[in-house]
Amino acid sequence: MDYSTLYKVSADMQVAVLVAVATGRQPVGKTDECLDELDFLARTQGITTVARFTQRLSQPDRRTYMGKGKLEEIRIFLASRHVDVVICDDDLLPAQFRYLETLFSPVRVMDRTLLVLQIFESRAQSQQSRLALELARCRYFFPRLTGLWSHLGRQGGGTSGTRGPGETELETDRQLVKTRIAVLKEKLRRVDLQAQIRRQERGRTVRVALVGYTNVGKSSLMNVISKVSMNAEDKLFATVDTAVRRVEHWGVPFLLSDTVGFIRKLSPLLIESFKSTLDEVREADVLLLVEDVSSPSCSEHLAVVCKTLQDIGAGDIPTILVFNKVDKCEEITALESSGDHSFTISMSGALTTLPPGFWPKAVVYVSATTKTNIDWLQSVLKPLIRQIHQQHFPDRPLSAQFFQDTPH
Image (cartoon, rainbow, N blue to C red; front, top):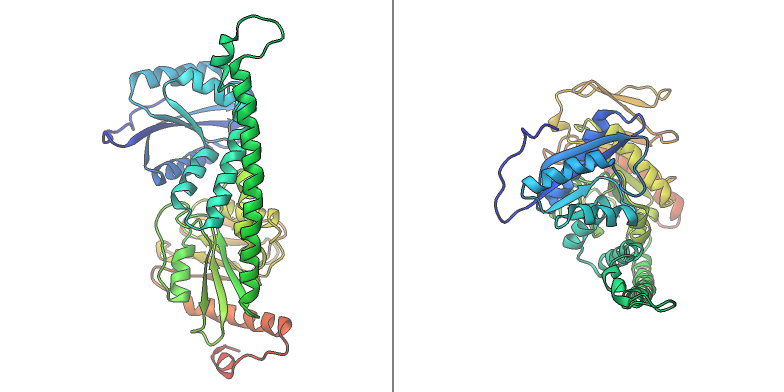
């Protein structure tokens, strides 16, 4: 392990080391990309990473996560440096979590899902997202309650057939968490019902939803289209709550929503708990799937988003693929080839391949920062809105201004 990249950090900043297992034949570059993303997540939460440890295994050890030799290397490093937390790139099993916490104590242990939960906790504003967050936390910690009270259980003596106080505390905590999960589900159901009623009260208006990988510029693009300023930061999950704006300045009214970004290795627990906050996506008439064209991981990010859309039941919604951040590219050439479903990004020489079964209604290249090609996006979006409007609401014609402004 090369520690030459270590650097000094301020005394009030949390310090972490990143840990990952490269499984099977996973390329080294992909492992590095995952750790780069994990580092970005950590920095979003105000944590500075000072070292990385990786090990190639056929699969993570179900008890120790990594091999004992690599774990000893990490333990020695932790003993010689000031480190607050060890962050694992995968979701840890309860047994792995307990083993690593014991081995690395007093350094805390965290996995990718727990880190994302902490970021969500600092960003969630609406009642719906806060309830979904608490539900996700309860579901996350429930299987990890085992062992928290073992120190009390050892005080129960050796009397056969008796329960130590630790076991009693554990059962009590389990029941409390189960009860809390049931309460949160009911509260979230009521909030979801209220949100559904509000969506129904919006009237017969075409709905357009911005979706995509986290930090690809969805909020910036929403600011440009809606002409209403909202939070847009160079951080992962800058948007957790769904924001909806009514857009009319293009000559046709439609609702534009910005949703939480997706990410690779997104825990099924998070998808399940936050499904209710993604109703704006599932109920949309058109999706603007935004991707960062300057990212070398564009293809993989696109595959993650398409897979997540399928998981939440939004895979069949008409989609416009919007490659954002063209201002960061020297040159982009799109292949007019539907046979291989691919696009060439000449700046990096990479080939962006569309996921199987995904073929968008249109593909545009824009920059939300410089407002490049926003008129191109308008020219492909408006005819699609017109078509959907006429299909859904044949008794409600669009204004003459809409047809005058729409290219033919």
